[in-house]
Image 1 (cartoon, rainbow, N blue to C red):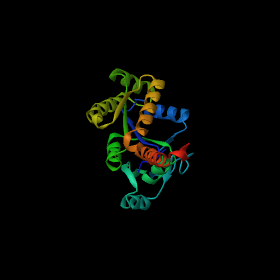
Image 2 (cartoon, rainbow, N blue to C red):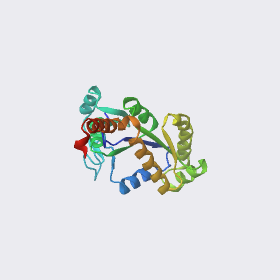
Image 3 (tube, one colour):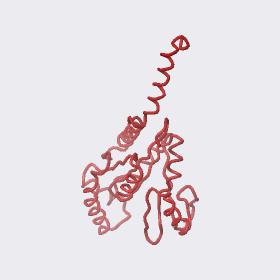
Length: 216
C-alpha cells in the first residue's frame, strides 16, 4: 500500500521513565510531517478532553464491532475499559504524507507489526539503569515500591527488545529526536516504498528513447 509521498507508521516504545512522551512531543513541535495516532476507547471522556483529540470515545458495542470488522491494528483492555488503534485513521494520515507516531507497549507493538509489517518499531532506552532509576525517582509521583516494580518490568521488557527495528538511547533530547527523525526519513526511502517512483522514471525513459526529438 506504499505510494509516493506516503508517510510511515512509527511505533515508539520504551521503559517507563525513558522519556517517550517528551521525545514525541518535541518531534511533533519541530516537524510538520508528523501526526500523533489517536486511539479509540470505551472509557468516558475526562474533564477537558475532546472527542478526536485525546481519544475517539465510543461505546462497548461499537468497539466490539470494530474488532469483528478487523478495523483495529491492536487493542487491549485496562481497568474495565477497552483501547485500540483505528487502522482507518492511521492510514488516512499516512496517505496525506504524515508519519504517524504511536506510543504503545511491547505487546501492542508486536500486534501492530504482525498486522502491518511495514510499521517501523523503535525502542527508547536510557543511557544506564542508574539513570532510569534517577528519572523515575525525580518524577516524584510514585512511592519506592512502585518504582521497583517499574524497574523489574523494564528488566523483563529488555528480553523482547530484539523484536524492534531500532533502539535509540535517550541521553540528549535533541540528539534523540534528530536520530528518530533520520530513521523515519530513511524508512521512507527503502526500496519497496520507492518502486513506484522508479517505475515512473523507467516509463519516461522509454518514451524519451522512442521519441528522442520530443524530449528536446
